[in-house]
Image (cartoon, rainbow over all chains, first blue to last red):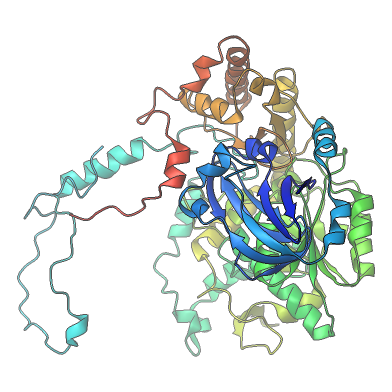
Length: 124
Length: 481
């Protein structure tokens, strides 16, 4: 099990060839109360750092990017009716989607927790 | 306040209509006939007048309060423009569309054509279409024109570049038309990072969309270079005219190198807006793009007659019925004529002076992430107030209680706890000073008694609304009685 982060504040929990994707607590704090989550379509092929889906909060609508390339295998349907789960547990029950990873080499472009924390400290 | 349906009393009428003396028709198909009466409110004329008058008194508008909503240019709408628009109220919009109908509508067509000529002069472009009904509609029209131009040249293009400070409608419009969006981060000088832009630029880029000055109220010093780089890759430069109020008569997008621009008549040219319209988003283009403009094109012949040109094979087609929102076009035309060249220059100067006055008056009280001379608007951050638990939203709510419409908040997205203020040229120094005093009061309260801000507003017809719940539990239908 491996947990990696993007500069756009997504996390991916990797188990073998599958990964579960979500938004970091930092991102969710910036967004404020989440009001709507657009879940990606199961079966869709996504490219690393391309748009996976989008999310709306009381402040803004934002895109969510795929941390790695792959095929969407599962989505967190509970978010459809209860987007607040993301506010309550962004890095756990607030996961967004699971993917079958097609290009694990993309991991090189992601950060481990310590690197992500360091990156956050550098943000304004 | 009761809904109009709740005030309904069975049988009450505003007007009494005589009984129909014609037989009831039975020719309509059964499935189109109404089985029970429509649930309309039943009120007397006086009930109705009181209902809407009372509603209007709860309205917060440019007619009642200072309205410094950033990137929206909420300037005063001179009342004489209403009279001017009213002069055309009797014309039926279909007339010009009928065969030979142009000869009966030379005056209205003339207004549209002459307005187009003035907008060309202001923007440095060659021709205008007045069809688009709002800014975002203009953007969509613009991107369709860009796509048609590339297709006609046999270009294969995939991408549209936008800065991360752009209006959300820019990437949305380009994306709707099938382009992939490339977003360029903002550099410390407050505009699209030139080096990153150069790296992102390639032969598959269809267009670069820029707002100049941008949503931070800053003018991009590299704009000519950006245009040159884009053109070298056979990409077109798109100018989002939302912030044109800052540069009228001072600089022209066409001279900077832009190929296509949409204008927001309802912002820059003083026509009413807010509350959903009607807007008007004419699109102006350089010569090479004229064949792709929406049909029908409005032309002026050598004998001075206006005509609607039949469909041009390269045109992207019709973008709106009739001629766009004509009432808005007539108001904008009158506004430009009334102010003239010198007047428009003074508009821009005063708008910029007012914004800089606000910026320098408040910079000790709020963080200013990009502390540079601004154009028509400036963007503060409530990051300092956030340390006391006060968000930009709380400050906005407090301003309502003090009689000011809040500025734009949480936009542009690149500024944390953004407060984006655009005073426009139509406000007096005393109004600006009153606003500054309340903003200072909010900053002082945030530092000493943050809890006082969290309950605002308290003096309005409705107190603090639960915006999160309103967005999560959407109920937009009122159950009819």
